[in-house]
Image (cartoon, rainbow, N blue to C red; front, side, top):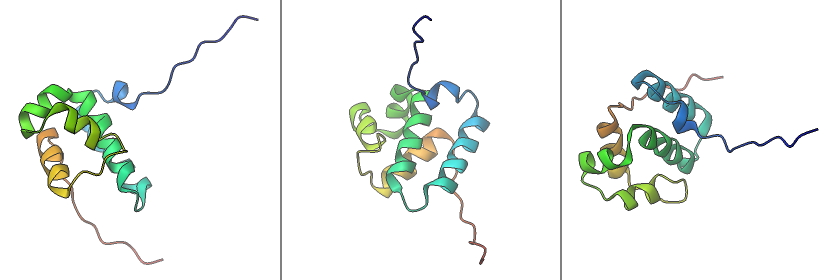
Length: 100
């Protein structure tokens, strides 16, 4: 039997449309709980899908700073998150949590 070659899943490769990106972020927000790094990393996937260079120009933030902040290892400020979501064309919204 031959060797099976696998490669690491990259969510950014599958985010083709604005709707894909918004739905992906919505799913990540629901899944993340209180894990802010999970959300930052999801935004990083969306940013890579759209193009980090363009995002850097649109936000006025350096590419390397964006890569670090949106890696899941960084700790971006809320102001950075707002700049990124705005530049990506994504709106965050609030919804009341339904009591169990």
